[in-house]
Length: 397
Image (tube, rainbow, N blue to C red; front, side, top):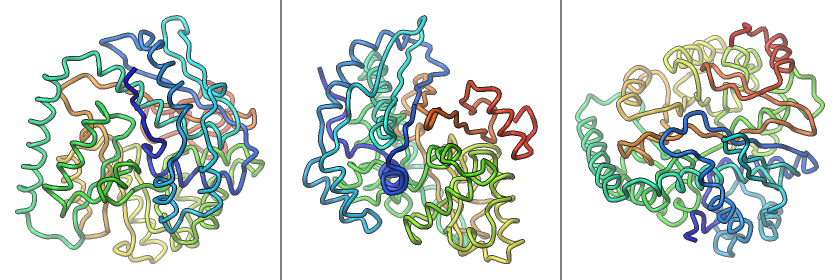
């Protein structure tokens, strides 16, 4: 068995930042995370179950190494008690189950949130790599390298464009979507070497540490969703989550995610207090131009200079799409672009659309209603209808 994951540090930075906040604020929360694949085509994912179980057995044998903990402790927003928790942390195999459910791969992690929330990125990386081990490796890597060379050429050509007020910066957000761990390392090593003026970091904490890159990330949907089940009035869950983040990080990690119940509902809660405290916003669904214009209009309404803020785009980006967004917004605000599949799994192959999302907290349904059709993951139609009603969202949202 060739392990996919050899280090618990090989996950997105925002897993650690959310994990720390949950440990400090709601360590008793029980949670359920469910894996979903919407488009497996070439190989049924159920064929992976024996190997997947072996990989999970291995994952649950891993512990954080001393040098990894020292690295985390060196990040100024990571607290010493969280590092002490990670020192004794180990995934529990009893908290994650894999089975064939009528021909569909089913993976469910269920248990204390601070013990199951970190499964997500590792599970997605494992499923992806096991799936793509079944393709022609030499052919895929040759095509991947050709496309990577073309990306470097595009970036160097982009350098000839007229300079704008704010710089172009992009990051790797591709841990969960990658072709393989080895290819992931090759891609970001190449980008860091060839275009360091544009490539500014990676969400992969292990590779950030080993390659001397900036680890990138703040929060994901699960952090905000958890607050739907923590006893606050549902209408106030976004404000409670944002306030919890402010109290935990005191000015660090100031990019807020906007699409748990849509941009309009988010902005209704993102008042002058939060708009001044947070450094910017992250886009992850819906039309990016429309989203960005709404964000800038909101800052203008609050009389905040948008050039002191940052808009981060992270929804299905390619370099050409990022260039287009940059040209549109770069003279009005700071920007960042988190790119996933297009960097770490652009091999000319059919890619998987897989997620592992928080579905319940403390026995209560939680949900995300994004600005993109098809991204909602919730089977509880009653709760979805209630959530839409509370936030005045159309029924088809």
